[in-house]
Image (cartoon, rainbow, N blue to C red; front, top):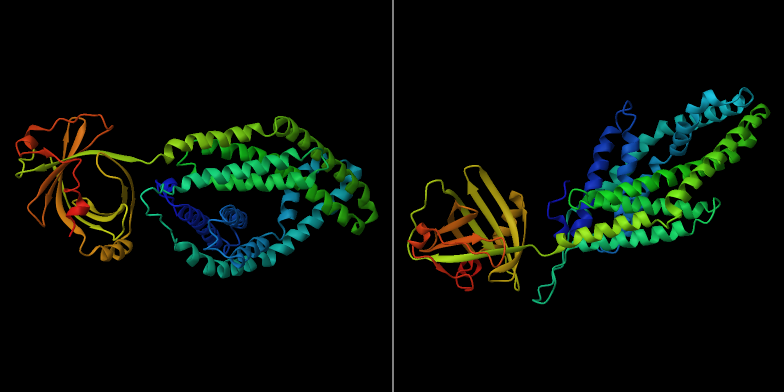
Length: 461
């Protein structure tokens, strides 16, 4: 599911559910691939999609409290756990196997024993993991998808209420995540602080997964994602080294005597790798307290500011005393427009029919006169029909003629349900002047911008 272009001015709960559905759709696509034994990357891709969805539900937990239950999140956790069998063995082999040519001869028996043991564990886990994952996911999706597909939005209709833009929640949650992440990074005082480094890694993933869906909408989001990936790389490698070392120590008593020297050699290599990674963590992240990541999130917040400023429609409106002589090249379309029964702002649906096809949209407008807040998004046919039924008795029908005049575009509305002609022009700023074209002046154009008499909602019947 692609996110709408205006996602950042949608309500927070809608943003959260759309992002979760996007990851659920990705997991669904990977689940289909799991049925193909030859698809070596399906399980990994599926695991990532599920992890992203779990992270989304966790990050937006408070906002989704009325939608998602603890039991629902546990279902997704069970799916994630079903994919984990063999994952550690897979990661360990990716690091161990390429080192075979560098292992001394006297250490090869232990090295070979470890590789064989890991291959055995990985092979055994892959026998049943795909079937288990498919069953667990299908059960979870059957419950989660219906909950996520319907967003229950609460609107504050009081005149003094500020629009509830979910983009502000995106920033606030990112700031909370980075603050907690930096707190754990600060607690990594030595190489022995493995638990703190692990928590920092998890929070880095959550921050990245939280921001990634908005990269097309917020240019500064790319900087946050890039920094998170860099931090994840070093913290992930540290975690993998710690997990592998703990596994080897637990397994070495079961190894034959001739393998012990090689196993100790591998443990020394892992310790050296851990030390080198920790030194890198210190120089790149701990020395400045994670300032680079903090700066990227601050830039994100600053860049979001203009995007959250209410978009305004600045226009002037004129009533005509007679039908105008439209110039050649005017484009025309039939418009059916209806208003939902709400107070305090304008909530309308519109169906526009022209030669190129039919477009259905829902528009929210707040304010009146020269400048108004406006937000718009497209509807499918089924949703439009449901909303249109609610507008009975509050509709207008008109033919719109669009005429470009210099830098301005004039919209001339010929009402089909009454004897009325109106013209509008949209401006770049409140103090911009748009000269009335001669063909409109000849039709008796009189400005009525400040009057509410000719508003479409007032005219609707």
